[in-house]
Length: 336
View 1 (cartoon, rainbow, N blue to C red):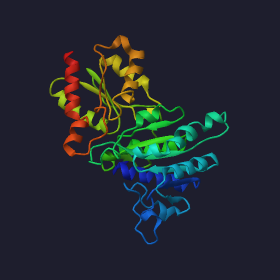
View 2: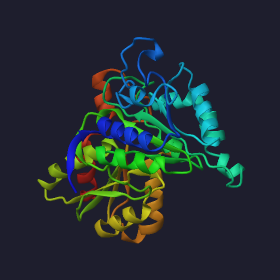
View 3: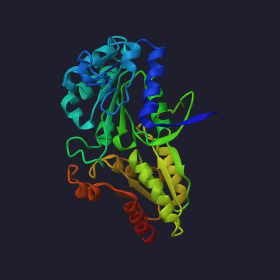
View 4: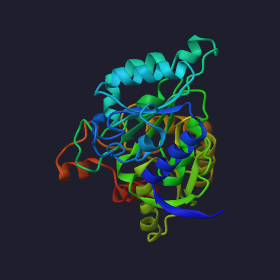
């Protein structure tokens, strides 16, 4: 099937355009997603990262809604809209701001289907950014995918390629439950091959980025890119690394990860999230339960220090795991 090069931002934009054209129940809500906060005559910018570019002009301001700076209000509005038949796609500029509207997510969106005994669907998508590396500081650079995945009732996805971003969004738009899409800021401008019809990417199915035989490296979003870079460096030292990109943090494709570990005997989880009780710990726990007998060495995680993201570029570079750190951690495990 024919494919074209496009960025992750463009792939997401194309997926939204096609979905909104096909289903007039889909609406978009968020700060500045039209541009100029709805000021008449302002140039429509398509959100801070341009993902909603052109939606307002095509589908109108009744379906593409600029909001005040109040995540509590507009996420609550979206939850109510989803309960009553619409399919809202909410944009929260930075996932750090989820703290402002966590009650709406934790106690309303995630629980509505359970509390209604399945009588109520909640087809809500929350699109938000994650990740460090651009000097945005402590309040605009967190990676809270592990925290959100701990909430029963939420689906959490972390695409690392344009094709996966579009495909996971397509799947989310067909879901009857709430999905949080964590889009890494550093990946919006990265090119990748995307099928012209836009791919379908199911929830709970990991992607094998690179096949290998000596060690399994599990990494999501920007860390999957760093892990792939590390593979070439490791190959120079005759280490064959297999990289698994989970794509969905919850549901997690434990079967594929465990199968890889049974082949390689070693597991390194590289994650930009929490160093304590985060996604990396969840992967290690799951693999230890299912493939303990195959392990040749203790599983290991490579995460940032247990601090907020530092603002100074030099400190941020040290704080954030990168391919050289992955190489060193892998070599240490191989030596062990």
